[in-house]
Length: 202
Figure 1 (cartoon, rainbow, N blue to C red):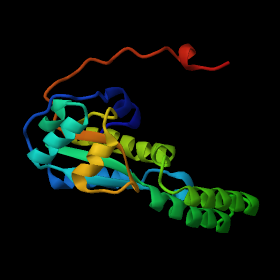
Figure 2 (figure 1 turned 180 degrees about the horizontal axis):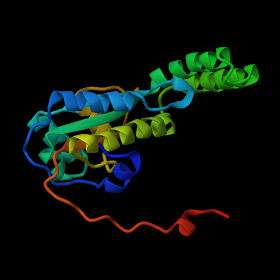
Figure 3 (figure 1 turned 45 degrees about the vertical axis):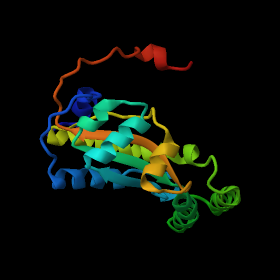
Figure 4 (figure 1 turned 60 degrees about the vertical axis):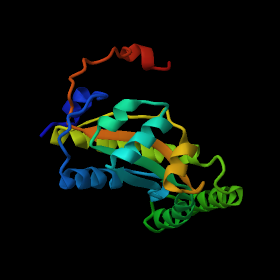
């Protein structure tokens, strides 16, 4: 099994996949990795739709501005944020943090106050504010996939409203990304990365 360092260094964006199906237990393990991700106030807003049907994958590819490689992956994970779930979870999560002594009571009150403000705003424009929580869960899956020899590719160039329409979801579900998953049919070289001094702020 790869170390975390090895997984990070080995990860590539895969856009060509073999036709071999992915065992269901592998998919379950990826979801298990995702659910262990950290989130603000332990709200755990991530929700996932597993897509294997060729017709649905074709619709997703169209909603991703015709990135047709999506249709080649045996599984496409539609990674979403449950906005109302986040609001409700933040309130109860703040209470839990206070009870275990992780934060002071005034911090709990601040979180509750901000949560109530979010509740009054409704779901409009809140999705992007909580997407970072889902992104952490997605990256857990991306790295865990390497343990099974699987490749993935973050797809963020998407039309969220079209994807919601495909599944009949309302505005409470914010689509964060698509994640095609499969056994790689390519071995891309590592792309250039900035040097450490280029990413530091002094």
